[in-house]
Amino acid sequence: MNFEKVVIMTDLDGTLLNDKKQISEKDMAAIDEFRKGGGIFTVATGRGVAMSRRVVDVLEIDTPCVIFNGAAVYDFNEKRFLWHSSMPDFAVGYIKTLMKQFPDIGIEVLRGEEVFVVNNNKTVDEHMAIENVVPVYMDIDDVPKDGWLKVLIAYPPEKLDTVTEYTKTDCNKGVNWVRSSPVYYEMLPEGISKGTGLPRLLEAMGETERFTVASGDFGNDYDMVRMADLGVAVANAQQAVKDAAKLVVGDNNSSPMSQIIEYIKTL
Image 1 (tube, one colour):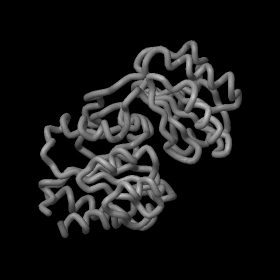
Image 2: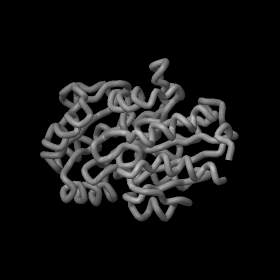
Image 3: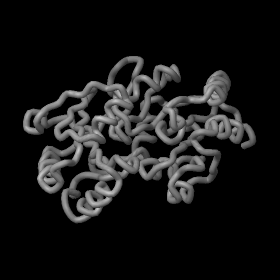
């Protein structure tokens, strides 16, 4: 297939990024070849602006990206939101309920380009260190209530399983909960996912006729992998994501993007 007809949108953590949070030289070379051939390459990530910027800069992406697990389309070149969907005001009550029910839970509120830590724990500290982000530590009542794009729960896996079960019967009306890793669980605006971010991105770029390729590994990638013309799962993906995909390639440590781009050539 002619690259000029294609847009690739990929997840970062666990997909494009290897276990060292790096992009392989082989994948970088393949992405460069794809773009020189007229292809559009971008990302769809659960990360916010600050946490995405380092990777976007390395990739030298010059097109908008889907961030906050689909809650926003952001142009890193122009440093502005092209579209976003915010949490309802009553979502703050859900967070207070979870903090009361699980006192040691880690909670990050992402709003615009800001990251607020409203309940800290070791998992949050590790997250901030990995992403090299300095958050604002603030009481939840002092965080501005408008413009919340997502709330990230950071908790050890066995404890997070309990929170996941709890939100199936409480704190779930008017919002969407999604597990994005073994230690992260995220509250998004109702109806929002990377799958809803995909058409918003295409509209923002004026590229709605392009053949879409979407790759991912975890539950928060399921919708976009299922909806894309070519949905791709990496070998380390959850089984549900593999089942939704039309193509399964090597794991995130095996330069999967180069494999995807080689496959596109055969279409």
